[in-house]
Length: 256
Image (cartoon, rainbow, N blue to C red; front, side, top):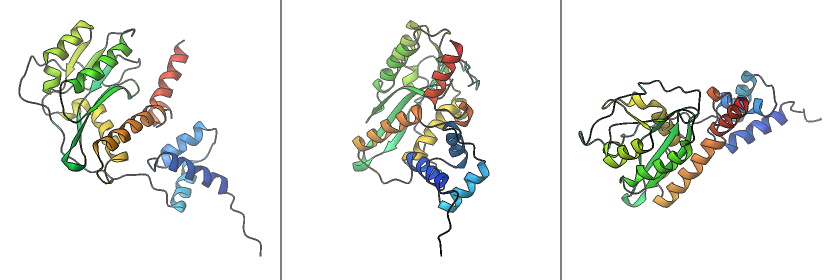
């Protein structure tokens, strides 16, 4: 008796490949977008059915961890909340945001990450990773970000919480020198900086939670790879199915 041919075999193989390429982080919606990017017109319900058949389930778990706080009381003059939850921007480099998050490593060590994000497309413009939350953790990525935005059409605003790093005179002086507006969340209000909170949640959900603790150097390497993947490959529905970098390039070409 002849074996029945599977009409979905080619599509199943492609879906399996996209799922594995993205470390199991894509659910049926994002796979639907990626198939569209590759020229395939497939109903999202069909993709959902195939993924269920293949046992492919995007990572949904979320583990709440204690948020790192660098607030130490009023250190300097607290800046106004200029962003005021108006996170959207239709031009690059107009609204940036930053924050610090903490990870546990083996041998009782910790890792601290400070990225600077462009709210226009969610792209991580610069970041620094260190074993201690020193002032350099925020000043190094700031220097890199300022180089990127210096030729911007509109004046840049950078938003943060009220951590001591962002109240430090060196941070404040550097922003003023480069004609960058400073904006700060209200104390203890994480929703005032939800774009960065969302990125941290995504980062930890997709490459940290559920994994065994590793050394500082191993985790640093994993985070570096993830940020590169997030910027250049990880597609978003709100960016018309493109990654942050793809979206920036696409919009700049349309504007040219």
